[in-house]
Image (cartoon, rainbow, N blue to C red; front, side, top):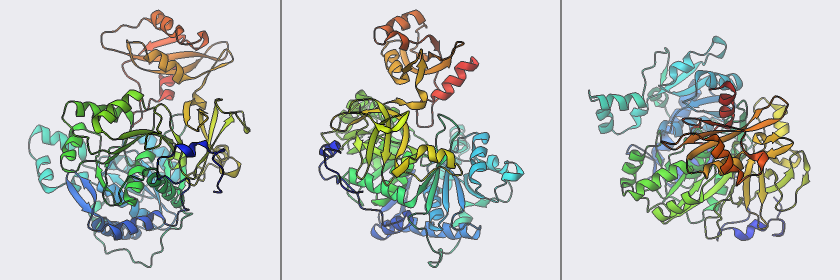
Length: 566
């Protein structure tokens, strides 16, 4: 990217000390990056799972053996290999073993319904899948035209220390319940056990690896605004984003950090911060199959975290545990939050508990995913998503005409350009053309405003704006007003069709225990904060709101439920 003066990139003056304005072009594929870490940090711990440690040398050996196992199953360059796994050492090995062959990883949420998984397999057509044994029967039960040729079954407990495995086999209810949560008893035939996949010699060095421009990953979007699509991310995209992350936090020490993988590795956020960024700097990655305060507290006693990527609800829970003195967070120097808005109160609690920094970032699956972040230093600005990463540019444009750039302070659609931006959607040329404009600009679909010094505030999703009486209403603005009421714990605001055309502003609210819904009082309360057309016409009390695995409220599902009267 050619350099431009600070006048056109005012955010550069807010970068933390030591952060470069540009990164070099990636020169390593992810496979080469991992090989470099194996050479440089051979004796260092790479992974920890319930106390069982895998060194970088051991990890490199397992990757090469698993790659040979996959090759003997017929996997070659350009083939898709589906991973349906929670966080575990086998996930890391399978990810890099697939890439070693020049094949393409396709990440899946193991908690998806059979219908959701089937849709994605129909799209990508993988014939080999590495699957958590609790999900094996779902994949084996796909229709004949989707039949997966080889299913590699993974029992998470085999990666645990022997004493832990022994405890899980005790004939007591607590042990049985814990074991049932971690492993299953699949009935599918002709499975390839994970152990058998590793029971090979190392892959021959004559097997060519991938190129930088090759597709490394198909990462399906969350589908919060429609049918999930597979974002095509290349080795260059993902390597660039790991390099940008490393540049953003100059205080990290290669080979000395401990990252906690409390975010799912199958999600774009957890994948980049843990599977690529952490491995690129020789960090120890402590893996949690699911977020659990007790597991985190136990791990922290022997492997204190130094870097923690997470989401606001996790930071809140950890901060409260630290306040009760059941968890020591004093070793966490850096933390970065994403996927949803980070409340200023959460930042304050976290930084008081740790003495470290917590900043908010911004990204999307299509940008590998991180594109903006608050500086890791005194110039950070809570309440915003920060400024563009090195080698990243932004524009604010008129959503109806993306050729029109808006003046500073005006709200418009955020566009992003940089080396981390994807190359399109799998098998969807039309939607790819809609998302990617000329000269590599990515349409985010987010409405944002930028301050004079370049800090970005996300206002709302373009597709979730409510149009009522010819006016646009931001759901987030209405939600903020409702959640200021002492009886409201959480809310989701959507647009519901009205008989005469247009939409009504509708809210689903979760009330505090003991409170009763008083729609008139809530509307009166909103009128003190909102113009009349933004005040909800319909308010419905609900027990809970549907959320994604990482805690984001799924407004589309809320809308569907309100329409169906559920």
